[in-house]
Structures are given as structure tokens and as C-alpha cells.
Image (cartoon, rainbow, N blue to C red; front, side):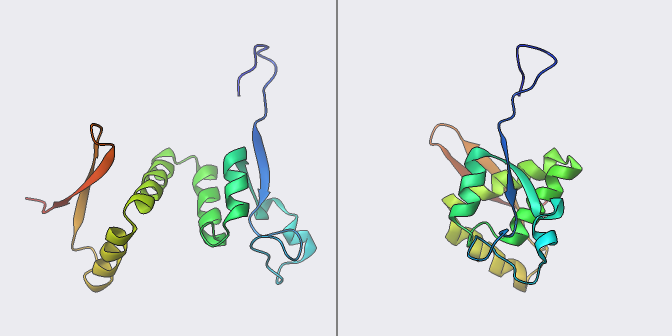
Length: 133
């Protein structure tokens, strides 16, 4: 974050473990050595809110999800990060619809496409089937 002195910065991030550093912690992996648990490979840099969230709900914030976040952040792929953020919001708003879509895709992979449109007036996202015509 910017500082009024151009030679300084304000650090507002937190280093967090993807798998816990000690037994009893969130997402603890007993197969990792102490050195592996303390390595940068097992770490992710997050804002304070996200650092608290991931350690409060390890069912939702899985090892796989956190590793995906880390890869996206480290590759600098803002487009992928934005897609992940949008999908997370939609997941919270319409979990049943997304589960139905996942099941459809299992039976008919890559047969359907959707357009997501924000309805600013009503404050939600609308999903429209897209036939490609």
C-alpha cells in the first residue's frame, strides 16, 4: 500500500499457512515434515480478512483451493483471479443452480454455455443460457 514517503510502503498483508504448522491447526497434514510445513511452498500471502476466513472455515477453504489461489496470484493472472472471485460470489447466491449445472456437465461435458449478467437495479446476477446462434 502506498505511503506518503515514496521510499516506504505500508504492509497490510498476512503470511498464512496452507496446511497448519502444528497438529490441531486448520488443514494440518501429518505427512509433511516440520521443514515442509514451515516452507514458502506451504505459505500464502493474504489480506487480514481472508487470513481470518481461511482459518475459520477449513471445509470451505480447502488445501486445493488455497493452492489454486496461490498459483493464480503468483502467475499474475488477474483474469483468472477475477473469474474465481465472481464464481465464489455466484456460488454463495445460487448454490443449488450451480450444483445442477455441475451435474449436467458431468453427463454432458462442454455442451452448455452461460452468460452472466449483473442486474444492478435488483442487485443480483442473472444467468442466461447461450446457444451460440
